[in-house]
Amino acid sequence: MPVGRLLVWMSGLMLLGIVTACGSSATPASAPTPAAGNPTATGVAASGVVPAGQGTAASTVLPVSTALITITPVLTTASPITTTAQITATATVTPTPSVTPTLGPPTATSTPAPSQATLAAAEKLDQALVSFAQAAATGNSAQTLQSQRQLLAVANDAQTAASADQSPYGQQLRSALGAVSDAATGNYDKMQAAHQDLGQIIGGAETPSAGLPRPATPPQQNLNDVSHQLQQAVDEYSKALSNGNQNDLLTAQRDLLNAVATADAATKNNQSPQAQQIQQALTAVHDGLAGDTNKFAIADTTLGATASQNGSAVTPTPTPRAVDLQPLQNDVDNKLQALQNALNTVSQATPNALNGNQSPVKQAQDDLRQSIQKANDTLANDNSPTASNFRNALGTARSVSEGDFTKLQAARDQLKAAVRQ
Image (cartoon, rainbow, N blue to C red; front, side, top):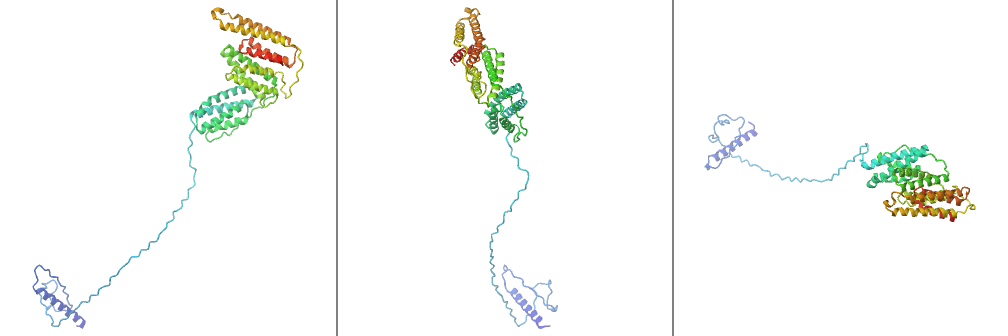
């Protein structure tokens, strides 16, 4: 047997013997006895060793050699390994990814719609404006005047909706109404401005692409004819206003508005003295239509004074008077005073006292007509400006004789003014 293996075997026997000796000594029952290992040497005779699993260690006595081999275990104390975890914090900056917007259709912004009242007013006004522009383009005076009245009436109705709407649409409607005022006189630029403002309301952001037709250039009119027609229309309106017949008044107002529109168009860009006098008369007529009926007499007087004008910038030189106008003026003025007295008598009397007969007034009217006719006959061959002015004053007096008593005082004033010229 090799020496190394023998030594191992002997060491095992000695260790076993020590364990056995310790186990045989008196040990308290309560103290646990640790079990020792039982190494088995390879090649030991069966008679000397109990195989593992057969019998107990306490009953087995193995021969122990007298030579003691002391095995001193060498314990090596391991130096503790200190592990220091060194964590170095490094700030990591993560860049924010840039987002590239995806191109696409713009986001639609909702625009509030105009109110129903504003929209309806704008549509109706634009229709009237287009109709007026089309009529003006034809050059038909009657059709143009009728379209003008319709346009002004619609514009007046639209004022209520425009005043109540404080939104941008209401502001556009008010702007259109401001342009319509000038558009009604034939101003094409104002027509276009109003049409575009109204289109903004009707079509939102859409602007009308089609322009309005341009008005036809009106023929040059004789200012004497214009003045005479306007004065006649003023007289007829005053007469209808005095009579109180509604149908006659409506007819007279229609004719007066037509005459006013014609006179305004004929004198708008004319700087002659006659045109300026007609414009003054037009101002008085507008005041009369607004309710100040006394202005009709002023308009009539002013128009009478324009009859001797020829529309040019040069004022004609007056010719010497051929007829003495003072007696004629005295005669007609006396008849006007007599008519005024008769009217005062009738207004103070009771219906029973007159028995329905107003003969004093009727008689005074007949006397006045006779004096007027006499004066006209006397002036038949007098073409002087003074005679012409006197004839115009007689025209006012004739309206009084026909029942327009509101002109009574105006006729007297005109007659006196004509004589003093």
